[in-house]
Image (cartoon, rainbow, N blue to C red; front, side, top):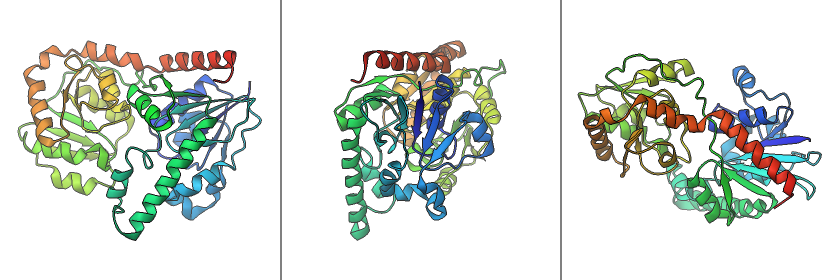
Amino acid sequence: MKVAIVHDWLETPGGAELVLKELLAVFPGADVFTMIDQRSPENRDMLGATRVTTSWLQNMPRLKKNYRSWLPLMPLALRSLDVSGYDLVISNSHAVAKGVRTHSKQLHVCYCLSPIRYAWDLKEQYLREAGLDSGVKGALASAMLEKMRKWDLANTTGVDAFVTLSRYIAERIERAYGRESIVIYPPVDTEFFTPSGEAREDFYVTASRFVPYKRIDMIATAFRALADRKLIVIGDGPDEGKVRAAAGHNVELVGRLSREEVRSYLRRAKAFVFAAEEDFGIAPVEAQACGTPVIAFGRGGVTETVVNGETGIFYTEQTAEALADAVRRFESGAGKISEARCRENALRFQATNFRRDFLRFVDDKMATGRS
């Protein structure tokens, strides 16, 4: 059986690339197709992709540096990827990959990380954060995203079966596309992220790209009100100035770190702090895999990966005050959360479970034919 995996774009390693890596472990002979490939040598080795075909966007240097701004061109570029000679096409998609052209003799399974956020649920937020919520440029950007939304909806008809990473996103897929999907949780490297047996130290930790929806500045603000608690902030990004401005003397920004360094902080921290409304959220699972409790905003995929009161504490409002109160509540009942229970919960998301469940799903679909 010939297998093609279509991926939106290959850039900085993230959750989508971890899924791609495991898909290649399930189908080691698969060919990868993508809009643009900007992987580092280390990332190439990590993925295990032997053959990658890119679109014509790969040969346009000026586009390559800021390719997200050229989203309107991507449906056209996608048409240049020819997967007609494959029996099984798997699109690993949070943007346009699910719209790849297939034919009636192929099975097209989409692992949908999300409907295109720019065009669906988060359209107004993206326009606002880009400063395009008013004026002529704003009107043009809004019209472009509306056109992208219509294209996205029209092209879901080429998907025979949807798989997704959480019930939270399954509901969004049903609202956007009117399609059902099966949930197969994405893989987390629970063999790497493990407890160390070291004593816990007197600090909290968070790790993320500094972008608006991650709300790292809000976490820093919350710890200004918790002046006798220490917070370690791992990461960098466009919002670094806002994070630094919000940080008090008890908040230490350590920048982007290696996986080994991140694991060391997770193993030693009192708890991992999380403020985003994520589709799934791999970082809180990595923390639990290290035996570390999670203090999280209780919306989105985290409600499926953290057990409130057993492996972490939720707060219900995305505010610094609510987070600070959650830290205090965590400390008052910290003895109720065990390292072993956190680790046990994280093992539900180990990579072997993803591989087994995804292969079983595809085998079933191949046996029963297109839906």
